[in-house]
Image (cartoon, rainbow, N blue to C red):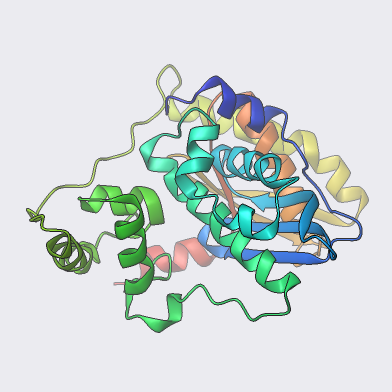
Length: 296
C-alpha cells in the first residue's frame, strides 16, 4: 500500500467542493473513464475581475485523483485566472504534503483540467497537444509531446518517473524504449545523460489479506449496493480483480447511464473504505476481458 500523507487521506475521505457547480461559466474535462482516470473541473468566475469565486470537481479515479482535485479547488478559489494558471502540479502535491511518486500523474491531470476550464471560460479551444506528437503509449494514449513537456517541467530522469507522472509505460511496457529515446533527447538538452534499461518497479500487493479474502470483501460491497441499482432497473457484475484494479460490468439501465461515472465513484469509495487501500474500479463490457485474454 502506498504511503499517503494525512492531508491526502483527509482530502480523499472528506473531499472539498465535490459535485456539480451550479452557474459554472468555465468547465474543463480531461482524461477518460476507459483509461481509468477522468476529471471535470468547474469554475464560477467573476467576469469583471476574472476572480474565481468558486470551483467544484467531479472525478473518476483513485484516491489520489480525488485528493488532488479537492486540493486544487481549494488552492484556486479567490485567485484571478492568471494567478490560478501559475499553480503547477508540484504545487498541488506540496499542498497535500506530498504524493507517492506513482501517483504524481493525478496532480498533472488536475493542472490540465484547470487549463481546459480557463480556456473554456475565455471562449478558447484548449488543446492538450497530445495529438501533435507521435503516439508513444497506446495503453493510455500518451504521446511524445506530453512526455517531453512533463520531463522538462518536473526534471524527470527515468522511465519509472515518466510512468509515475503520466502513466505512460504503466501498461504492457512495450513503449519503454520510446520513452527512453525521449529521455535521452530531453536530458541532453539540459546537459545530463540518460542510462537506459532502468526496470519499472512492480506494484506491491497489499499485505495482510489473501486474494480470496479481498474478492469476498469486494463481492460483499457490490452486493450491498445491488438493491439500489436494481430499483433503478440496473445491476453490477464483478468481472475480474487485477491487483488494485477492479473490473466490473454495469448492466440494465445502469449501462451507459449519464450517472454511471458518479455511481462507480461512490462504489469505489465504499470499496476503498472496506479494503483499507486505494483501488480503481474500471467499467468493462462482459466478455471483453476474456476475449482480450484469448487473443494470440
